[in-house]
Amino acid sequence: MTHIFNLDQIKKVLPTLDIVKDLEEGFIAYSRGQVVVPPVGELSFEDPPGDTHIKYGYIKGDDYYVIKIASGFYDNPKINLSSNSGLMLLFSQKTGLPASILLDEGFLTDVRTAVAGEICAKYLAPKDIYRIGVFGTGVQARMQVEYLKSVTDCKDIIVWGRNRSGLDAYQRDMQEIGYAVQTTQNAKEVAESCNMIVTATPAKNPLLHAGQIRKGTHITAMGSDTLEKQELDPKILQTADIVVADSIEQCLLRGEIHKALEAGLLNKKDIFELGNVIIDKELQRTSADQTTVADLTGVAVQDAQIAKAVYEALR
Image (cartoon, rainbow, N blue to C red):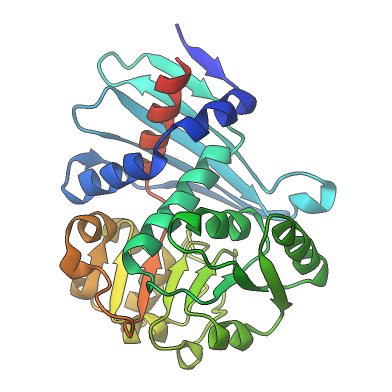
């Protein structure tokens, strides 16, 4: 029997789970070669602008495999719809039969992405975060900050956005939950005042440049998840002390690391994979002066881990 669960049911059970632990275990298994993750399936749209990703995979010897479909259509808020949507399909790894359909409307993708940012900050961000810079005003621009609560007590935010209405909405929403928020349309102003930066936009040209970054800053770049997208000047990665990929194999083909490699400004041997960073203290931040970059393109093992945890709790 295939169990079908809706968003309300998923949201109700999620707070009872330790998703950080589940995702860390998934990243470690991935870096140890214990995970099968085929190349990402992708559809890109121009009018209106959007993209759909199909990610699928499994941990060897586990009970399930997952197929996740997630879309981002960036003009949806103009017609009062969420920009993100999707679902997760969970199958038995023993029989191939469908175990569950999680009608999460893209929510689990948002959560596992925010938790990945939390994990990156846990091992790479400076201990004393005095201000958080955010590029973007959408769902991830909010969730990435909220999920940093376990890493830092910092409540001071400066947010960059392309339009004033988006900035005003972000400021209002985040202030309501206890953050002090300054808005700006000047990227340099963000870089000059922060030592923790999150980029969460669908930009196709760099928003941040190397000369703007303060020494000792950590950057989690998670918006650039296709071949065309780019949020960082490749020289930022060239000059960083630590560069981390959620998946090196995937980041060779998409994301900020891909752009830096393409520009000849980064060597593959200088990239560390997140699963290895979690288990090896020598690959983590060791001083306040280090500049660190994490490139998150989203790996199917994250979907497998969160889908499995949610399903087993609901079942």
